[in-house]
Length: 518
Image (cartoon, rainbow, N blue to C red):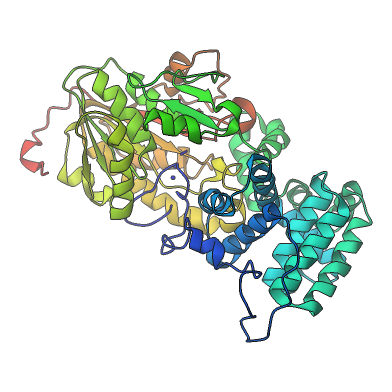
């Protein structure tokens, strides 16, 4: 799913916004989301018509972080989409931009833990606190317990945010709550909320800021490799700020330094800010997680490439992996096509391909029926299916609080249909790479098993051997007894990408030419 949203008709991809809830595409990713999301100080009066308190001094970085929190809470916006334009609009320098990013992302990652602390200090459930006040309390709690920000600055400016947004009465409440929180150490608060837990998993959930159901899903996925003892390391990695990884499109750009350990196309962003490098490259360098790069490279390396092959990216939006595949296809005289049913996302795919010379046909069809209308014609197909995004929680900090087990139940049938469609679209001897940015077993091995049920024309390849061959240095891949690959943030420094490689029998000579449509 690096890079990027569950819906019934067509998948999204691994870039920002992929796990966006259906029907909310227009809510995230604009500066208007931030400006209208309840920052409060920009509006002359409360929503009920009462005059607002005079605007009090708030550091710009904190104001930006608070505005992002409000947009996420009120509009289901995505922090990774709205934070960069908010920083630009506020004209923050590099230091303040880094502070705003840490405050927004850190607060969102640990929201569940902070809500438990706030509830204890306020002596009321967090969901009974006004949302605008609660976001300010979360922001202050993060500063008090997880940063070196001075306590008085964290308290005073957060109280000012509440006063501007909700008035003097609310600010007095916020001040009292934050004073209580500031009187105890992070360790004391951790102990207090853990003592209130009803089970070991709930205790771990409070400590690690992950919902209980996510913890259990991650534990099961690790246990499938015999490595359940790595759970704490994985949860810690989810809460760490990830490094920015760039991809240099083969034949069009050269990777810089520092190099990443596995994908030959991957390297770290110099100084952490990629915009200058990306702009100078004209699109031949872009942000992409190393795990996403490995998935695309594995499809290309799964078998020797023959000139004239026909490739497909079935779930292409917004186009990050499509561009990488296109650059590889260009070097081998291969025709690449892409498919993305949502027109706005199809435009993103076309934009992503502008840096790659040559023409790539971008279809706008339902991926579930693509195999019926393009039967047995593609030699390689990437199915980067829509998923819960549990493998990218470090990059999408609010996602862990939005997803539920019901999302898995809704997505799995779609994933099975998409993979089945791709298998039907394979030419004899062709290969499908099925990938998700989720380690949830129902979305990974469960989908592969279901799609292969009753089929005798498909053989599973050893994706572990292919990834090991692609990697520039030895890579520690666990095994569940199959040849499938599960990458991990704590072990590989990548998103938790899953990969299975499936090949159609080359001796399948059924006449399917009459069934093909385009």
